[in-house]
Amino acid sequence: MSDKIVYLDNNSTTKAAPEVVDVMKQYFLCDYGNSESTHAFGSNLQYVEQGARESLARLINGRPKNIYFTSGATESNNWVLRGVMKHSDKRHLVISAVEHPSVLNVAQYLEKEGYRVTYLPVTDQGVVRLEDLMTAATDETALVSVMYANNETGAIMPIREIGEYLRDKSIIFHTDATQAVGKIHVDVKRDNIDLLSFSGHKFHGPKGVGGLYFPLKKYVSGKLVRMQIAQFMIGGEQQGFMRAGTMNTPGIAGLGKAADLAYEHLSEHLVAGEDTGVSSKRDDLQEFIEENIPKTMINAKNAPRLPNTLNLTFPGAEGESIIDRLSEKGICVSSGSACTSKSLAIPYVLDAMGINHDIINSTIRFSLSRYNTTEELKYVRQVLPKVIEDLRLISGFKE
Ligand code: PMP
Image 1 (cartoon, rainbow, N blue to C red):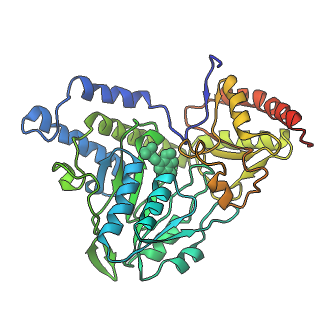
Image 2: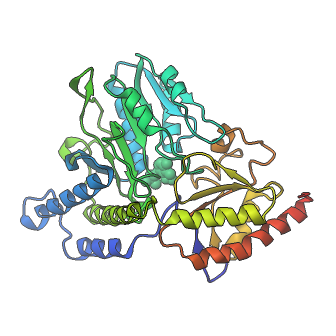
């Protein structure tokens, strides 16, 4: 492996911001108490957790008291799907076919338990259609869970339209916003989102900490009604009995700091008329590849897309081989979600978009962050065309 590392796999995980690590150090080394303790050394830490709730709430335009901390989006998604279905007398769940495994596999588990699940298809651009949701969601439906943005393609789903449609209905609307929070403006009020999952390590916060936005109540036919969700982590009294387990104060403090940094970063770029500074770097790379590597397919090109994600199919070059060759040169990209690419022969997100099986495994994903430099992307331009050319030569592909 090369000494030089150009990290372009930020949808998988991100580097923690140095400011985040600085904040966390204090709560590991100095103020290391348990915020549930009676003594002030511990209980004062509740202010730190409250501060983090405020930071997270500002980032998604929710109320601080509705933020619950978890170990990450996998736990939040499990909590919602299992917790809502367990409590409801309705037995139907709607999700999209391109959800992350932490939603998809839980839905399949629930199906085995006797619940009915509808999997919404996506367009060839990887986007759910509101019409399909309108047909699928009925009086029998307890929960609709549609991701905010897809981790593989970056395609952004019509969350505002779905929220508007489900507003005031007795169906709970959850979105797994793990890939959207910190990258684009997410607004639970504007979008009428009931529940929202997020994860710190996707926006330069620490790994192993995330949360669930959970306001306890929603309007149904004009009246405020309690959303019934069973606890997922049962144990102590933390977080109002809703989520047991000693509070991860260093992680939560780091998560709050990451939310502040993301908020500042998003606001700065909103003034400049774009969602984040990474979009121009992604667009330049896309343009270069389109011009210099023939027959490249840009997946979800015409969908509203996360500013940092570029999903490409290079017919004639196998995805895993591209990754290996780039890795030898220090460039880290992915062929799909780290949780799925090892276990599934056919990438299900691209399959749902109707991509031909002959070329489906010739796909790789670049995902940038605000830390990537123009120099790094210049290096990718130098390396990538030759990698694809060599692999196409080996496979006998004719351009
Ligand atoms: N949902 C999506 C869309 C994701 O991309 C991921 C992480 N790959 C998760 C959920 C799981 O997040 P965590 O690592 O925090 O459990």
